[in-house]
Image (tube, rainbow, N blue to C red):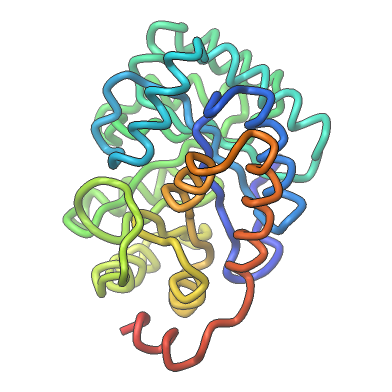
Length: 265
């Protein structure tokens, strides 16, 4: 199923699968979709998550300690697909778990589970030819990270091979909530626009309604991750689904125009 954003800005919600446990992740994901998330990124917990900040690293540690494996995440995706047929589902992983699972087996299982797209954070586009063959054979949208430091030639290549949406990193560094967005994000989206008509989603540091509104000024969707994971970390399993739903509904509320304008600069 193609990834779609029903309204602008769309909302992509990242969750670390298995934190605090798979059953709770399922309930949180359903609540997030019902509250307005267009796409759920199911993060595969990994012991060495280099691109992730401390909040998501702790979530990965908890999920790994709980025994969550890639196959469990794919089974969770299948359950979500049945429960919410129209939601976008993306597997968010590092390459090592996929490689150990087997790239062809991974793609075949993901397709059967109803997954729409795959984002492997450490898969660089210059070395992705074989990876892309497997994904396309199984109708999985390849999603790549585009950074402010990427040269135009690399952005062009990312735009050419991406499907679903292009993930624009708002700044260099690791994931994590920030007080303000940087001007790098808008500049990066403008550069990407010259190479693609795909939706462009901005992530890394997006954590408030003001941020989401500011992203909507120049991009198609906002990706929220660490802020959601931090709420889950502070909540009980019983509280987490409703807490996430309230937070996501809050992200859709209109912030003050002054705040949005300041962040958009």
